[in-house]
Length: 466
Image (tube, rainbow, N blue to C red; front, side, top):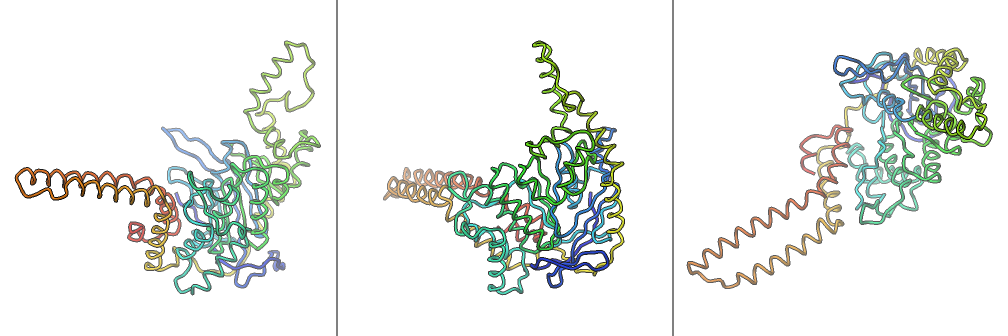
């Protein structure tokens, strides 16, 4: 299934801005701000004659200069909503509702939207600078000079705070490299090379410690302040990380629990009768209220208290089932000023007038530039892979020396002819099995090449040439 939305041109740096006709315009040359709106968004999955509702009537918006968190327990619909907004839904689902970008419907173009996946798919044998540079040559127009590409690469490295590790290897299972947080920032750097207006991220802090997670979100906050629209799903951030988000979209079971300013979510829960304790992480408290997995824990604790004849707690979270709490929060939100404000802002942003911008159909790099870049990258990757290149080269030399020694001066008799045939069969079989041994490295490189080729629509012949 494809999702339509308007596109906007990629643009350069520059923070700040002014307000014109109710819409904030950022200083960044010809950069057009991207206002993303979704209204009554519903997604269902048909299966065996029945339908499963993944999202139910969601309404919200994302504005430039702000970073929004999509939060909720596992299975709440975070990734589905993110894929829906980014136009990445699979074709076997059905979506209803409106998704508008700058008040219009049009396909999202390359260079307008960027999507950072949860897994960091990078070549471990390349340095940070090499990784970003090769990606720049594959994405940016071939008309750019090397100096211009170099300036963009260095600017991106600085923007992501990667100066200190720019000449270190990414690393893999046998090569020590950069940290997990630095890898995530490299993945983000690759996507913002084309200066997209919209940036989507799928749980960018997954698997990171609190310090690395804070650094990643702080970097994304800086990217948003540059005039871009940043939307990120996140599972359970620390209180320091949560404070960095401007807006919050809280989901449970595909329904809206809360949408609005992140700093006002605590007040909303308090007004609904579920105040957050003073020393508790707000995000932990929100998920505690809407995550049904806690019902099992609550039932176990209640049983233990009855056995010990201990008075039950007056905490509403322990006395009410999650489905009851969620129902109360959903009803509270529907009648709240937050929902009314969201609907009013959606109507306002749906009618804004902005300049038409060019839509790109794919990577702006030429066929020859892509091919030569892939060859250089693949050659460098193989030369640094000890198991794939150097170890195999040593084996070839040793086997050649051994075979040459055994069959040296074998003669021309009848038995020598049989020996020569056996030698040829052995060499053919040996070369075949040694070629098969190179598949693991080939697969690792294809993991990087295939998702990227699908994203930038690289020509098929070039993909096969890598």
